[in-house]
Image (cartoon, rainbow, N blue to C red; front, side, top):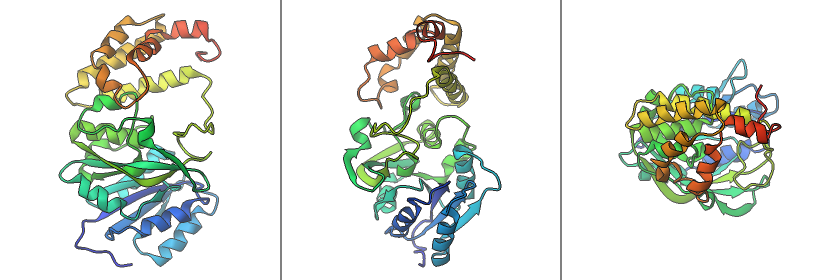
Amino acid sequence: MNADTSQALISIAMCTYQGEAFLATQLESLLAQTWKNFEIVVVDDGSTDATVAIVQKFAGQDSRIKLFQNPVNLGINANFSRALNLCQGAFIAPCDQDDVWHPEKLARLHACLGPDLMAYCDSELITAQGASMNMKISDRIHMAQGHNPLAFAFWNCISGHAMLFRRELLTHALPIPPVKFHDWWLAFWAACVGDIKYLDQPLVQYRQHAGGQTDLARSGHKKEVQNRYHLFTERCQWFSYLAQVAQPHQAFFQKLYHLYQAQLHQWFSLALVLHLRTQADALLFINKKKSFFSFALKNFWGMKAKAFFSPHHYHID
């Protein structure tokens, strides 16, 4: 297939790992895009199944597919950092290995983006077998747009598979830190240094299955992490990275990090709740169902109290 060079080059950054089950279907949907000037940068992270063979077969039929293989397993965030670094396009669209894209996904997102830094669409949830679950991501959470990074402190609404952004974002967002998810980090940075547009159309079929990263359908295939102390330390680390980003809300994130970290040695933290209250509307925007009362109550109790009342869940190593 020859690319339409009258269009800007869009790089599709796909990371693969043990993806043989759904990969061919995803690649077929990428090659069916109405936007023809694209490259598919596939970085495999040490798959031992048929993933590489599937990509090689498709690459032999379409030169727009470029395969790279990591000599050692990097993990998802480092692998996406490498894939994004390898992209040549003026616009970049991260891609999962197990979804299905609408044929006009790239074209519609490019039109929506305009002069802004990032655009993203809604997604329809499908089962492992590809059947519609009659649910969209927007049914679960509010979809943020604009330029307020506070919205991404506790929750994320912008899936990597749904976004298209300008290459300039990479000068700020790379390398992706080893916390949370790559798409969450990219969304946060996009809100810090530019504007985000939301396209209210489900242009991706987002497959829910046992090997996926998230369980938005709440089907139960993701088991709860029992030691919530590890979740606490992960969130502290996340806030430490957000606090380092120079932007208008940096002071808020710096104080948030220190107050949250202090919870480790506290029974309760009224100071943290009062700090969260100052930006409650922005912090809670994405979460459709959580009230500030329940949010505050969860953050009021320090780790000493949580470990005392739930020693199994909050065992501190």
